[in-house]
Image (cartoon, rainbow over all chains, first blue to last red; front, side, top):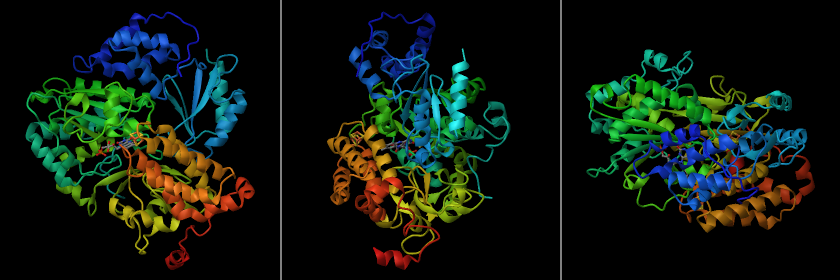
Length: 171
Length: 456
Ligand SMILES: Cc1cc2nc3c(=O)[nH]c(=O)nc-3n(C[C@H](O)[C@H](O)[C@H](O)COP(=O)(O)O)c2cc1C
Ligand code: SF4
Ligand code: FES
């Protein structure tokens, strides 16, 4: 669902717009709608999520209807429609990872962070969720953290603790 | 040591850079193709090689290429499918991470063969690091004159772009991928028209898997005949297998097609056997969508022939006792794994990933997930087992795209081969919550096949 938290006017920075402009050149004239997914990724990398206001702005930039952006933003699981923690731990929950302990890792993350799947910690630092197979089943269990989608493999409870500590101390 | 056609140089330090890749014979196929071959001759060479699509369906690549419509004055496109989201499959990520120029090289030769002037590599959005790697590799290749205008002075122009997905398994299906590349939801299209006639922006389009495109490089370098000598029967060449689950050495292996499954699982050259000294219970041999087989039937066919890693041998026995090579996602289950739980997990996956266009798939995957959940958590009824079979049959063949089948097969095959385990969950709900059913009769080393047959 599109959740309208607070209605904030947003303005894309000129750096961001330069990147958008380059992406549009990758497609034939008049097919700029193809830039939608890459542009949404850039918006999310900048703001941490994609607000309805940002979607409207993207629609205006690409000269498409707002609904065309909404239907795409709501279809693809990578796009966050609500604010998230600064770091979103996305743990693979699919079969092959579960064969080697992914479920235990998710329980451990839930207990360590003290929040349920999809919720944000009080300090705004973390949220987590289970995601489907990340094409890394041979290195299972695995998790990823956007917006760079850095990968952490062969997870153990200890390595997860260390990761969370490191992220906490990062400025 | 087995023949390696794709990963031969994977351990050369710096092979991800253009210079090292080039020093090790990289981009020879581009020189050969562009300077001394016609596009049609390349298509012929690929036909001769017998190469079959490595994305899962195994369709002959040369034939697919020859179907591409070539109307005057209309652009044609090659789109590489790097969406890699089939549970159990991670070979494309491996290839793109470690030897990205192999894919770029294959894309140039294949685009030239198809007459494409702009090509795209559609990479699943989660693979941002691989997207950066590919973009860097493309810039290097362009710098060296292998991409861009007038490649190697031939007059052939090619631009190559990387397109990110957004996290949707369905976008691996080629028409959904095309929709996604057009900036839309990943809803598969009704075929016909096939992409070869009307694909991206209604232009003729070929969609090929990463590994398929990479295999074009050795085919052009050494000739289709040489490629066809590797492998077994109609399963020519080598295949990247993604091995996961309870194996001693999970990972990506390049095998010569026709390798005995037993050797792949147990030899030290490959997976090194089952982890922690356990015994093998079951295998999903070609990614989550293909039928699961108990250990006895993955090691030997129902007729007692050693099962081989090839398109034909893995499907020997049809759905009764065989499976499929699929995308080569080889998932091994040890004696401690619960088949019901895994089937529920896979059903949840398909329900989550169904695009929702067709009712049998949208509703059926949801029902299968629900019923499997109650079986796994001790609230199942005996009639649920046949209900699942019934739902799976109503999905199969009744949908726009093969995701419906892909959701139905794992459930139908799990019940076919492990029915007693499902029944045990119904009759012993408490116990099923506390322990697993175990090996039962499925284990390796092989029981006598006669016993298995007569028991059923
Ligand atoms: C639900 C679904 C998911 C698929 N996912 C992939 C994928 O991730 N990668 C891929 O190469 N092919 C995938 N395919 C197969 C493609 O539709 C298509 O057959 C393939 O990309 C063709 O390339 P090939 O002939 O080189 O194998 C998928 C098919 C279906 C039905
Ligand atoms: S079978 Fe499922 S995924 Fe495929 S088009 Fe129909 S609803 Fe969508
Ligand atoms: S199942 Fe977790 S990465 Fe594939």
